[in-house]
Image (tube, rainbow, N blue to C red; front, side, top):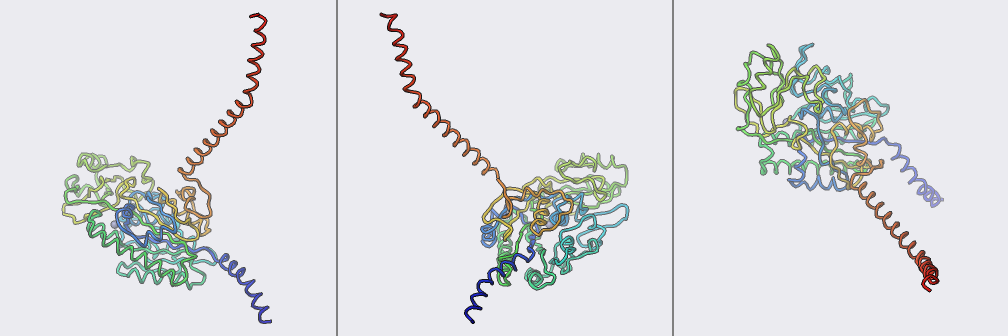
Length: 453
Ligand SMILES: [Zn+2]
């Protein structure tokens, strides 16, 4: 009897397990290492990250959004919107109607965030699901009256280990289950600013530490039994450009400080004129060859950075590696915020888990494409966004896609097959028709015979 029960149980158990894992909603952990420039991956060693990529996918460049700053880009990742549409248009903002100010140290007013709905809010509002966050910008704020069920108030002195421990605990033991979680870390941005991305010795040390954190992340997920079933995205908000004390644009040499309010400074200065706008514009226009000055209405369309009241009447965009300063020195050796078409401003994206292919590399996606991909993985209805789901299909295990080399291979292969078949048909035809033409020749000879004769 005992044997019979055991046999029955062993026959039923795999089916139960399959049903159990199938009924679990998919889980996604989104990780950002601030300021992780895409080509660090080629220039430095990352044993842990490379092994993560080997069993997952890599997008070598993520074209981020203008301006290439931290708050705006983190909000674009989780909303799929350009800055003009989600409203976080800089790390420092001013709203002329309400006279409110926003900065990275004073970001708690939901007013600034409510122009969009981030994915953790959408996920939180679904039945039987919850969200968790460790320091991702905006996650400690009541956006549309909702925070993630589990979050940490922003505090840069909290260690990576503590953030990771919280996230894995919440992912493991919560009810309703945490299906979407985010984790944010301030490096290599802080060191990129301090040393500059071309300081190889210091950057090697810092990036080596980050690779160690990625190793501990994977190890921790394995330890708590999450690794096989969770989807993990590792990405960043922007890259970093090398700056120099010799490449400074002194705004005080361009404008009288009394003629404008300075809302944001470098490398994109946001200027609110106090006198005639055209006069301020003309003075800026003739001030330095190392910057572009735009009236708000003339900001190039490719920036998608115009249609929002928080974008000031004049913006000044410094050339790559140049910094805009006031009449005082600046010690930053690296910066970001520049034109988002510059490769130095781009981060990368790596992903691993059941939703993703294994060992697949992809060239470029737009930052706003990440949101519809995450919604697809979680089975969430996406809100209106600026991304294109089709651009991420090749990364996903449940999607069919052809990339360009494959498409070229298929066309060339088809042409080869067609050519071979045509040649075969011609040869066969020649062979079949050869005796016939010989007999015609004979006939002609026969016809000629009498004439000759
Ligand atoms: Zn930064």
